[in-house]
Amino acid sequence: MLFLIAVVIMGVFAMIGYNMAAARNKDPMTWAILCGLTGLIGVLILAATGEAKAEIPYEPLRVRDDSASRAARPVESAAPAHTYDKAKWEVLKEVDNDISRSSAMALQLGAKYEQMLAEKYLTLGDKSYLPALLTKLKEQYDAEQGAAAAITNSSAAAEYEKFMTKVSANDGVDPDNGLRVVKAVEYNGPASSYHGGIKVVYENGRTVLRNKSMTRPFDTEAKADEWGLDLTKP
Image (cartoon, rainbow, N blue to C red; front, side):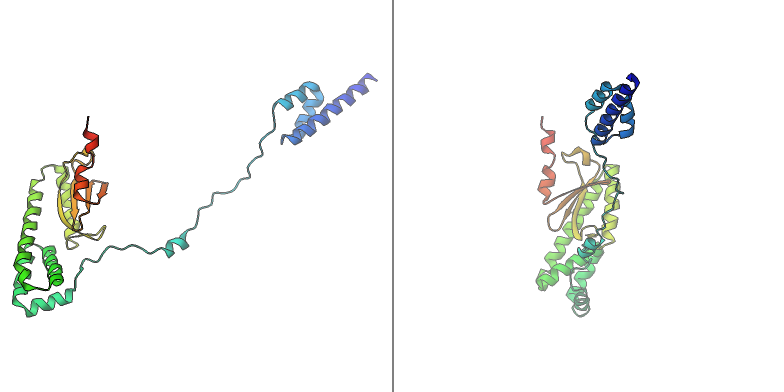
């Protein structure tokens, strides 16, 4: 009789354990056996474990396919190397001796200076400006040559040579942004992380500090020169 009562009690606790475990998202059979064997103790232990969190169903990582949106966006391209009517300029050199001589003088400085002369002359359309334009080009040439000679840091010299080789091959235009370079000098400003690099100034006033893989753009040369001053203050 006692054995029968014990079996019934075990069955009751086993059922309680089964239901509680199922409600708590645990293994019902395991807890049914444990609660049946341990009785109230097993039920209390199960109750103390709290409710298990539902497992998050596994989903494989999906790579977003944005090829359609990329195709819809226009691709930015660098500005063309020649920003003037080259055919018209060549004809003018053939039929006008003054323009031909001026072109030859500018070409002695370099191909980019001859192109700059063409761009500015075709904008003005007045031969009386040719002497002044040539003077400005010579001043820029001398300044650039002086800047190159003034670079004493070997790291800056290497950066300067690498950059100017790329620009010279593109008629004086930086192929990375389509802007014409007017000055490139060794940088010795307050931002010490760019020491050993160069400061590049473009025709529209934009300025970029370059040092190996680092570049930092500014709207004006003045902003580039001032950047980092707050870091040097005590």
